[in-house]
Length: 176
Image 1 (cartoon, rainbow, N blue to C red):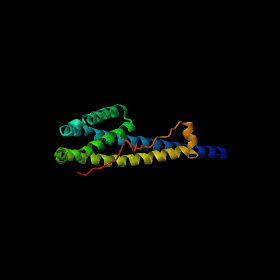
Image 2 (cartoon, helix red, strand yellow):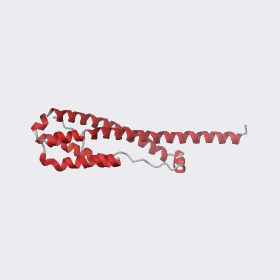
Image 3 (cartoon, rainbow, N blue to C red):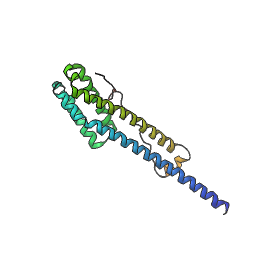
Image 4 (cartoon, one colour):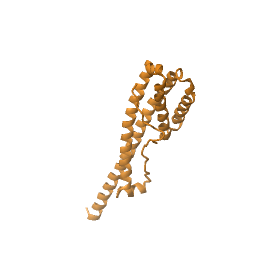
């Protein structure tokens, strides 16, 4: 086999390996994003129960409860992580309400919902860390030479990290 053909085959194999590596990283980002969506959906499925439980105790908090219901619907329709972040913040506000309502604080239903929400939040944090790790790995790959040449050629775009807005999402954990 002539040397130029051998070199061309080696370059082609390297090209294919780099391309496959980019595809694997992109798919890892999609899978991680999907995991976040699953955990958010599970958490948000608890919201109607939480709202019903709190309604009886916090009638004057009607606006907050309506906002939570609206944000949940918007997230379900758009699947935007920014809506999830805002909704998480509002859920934390409901958890803070328990401090103002001793009967709510002692409610078995509320305590059970709170425990489930805390569990979901822990799972969400783990999923967010994995997602951000996968996004960072993918973004680094498409920015690094020589894979950046393939990324440009095949129009791979950078993914955004999942960051909570500190003003909207106060990760407050309350143990009642």
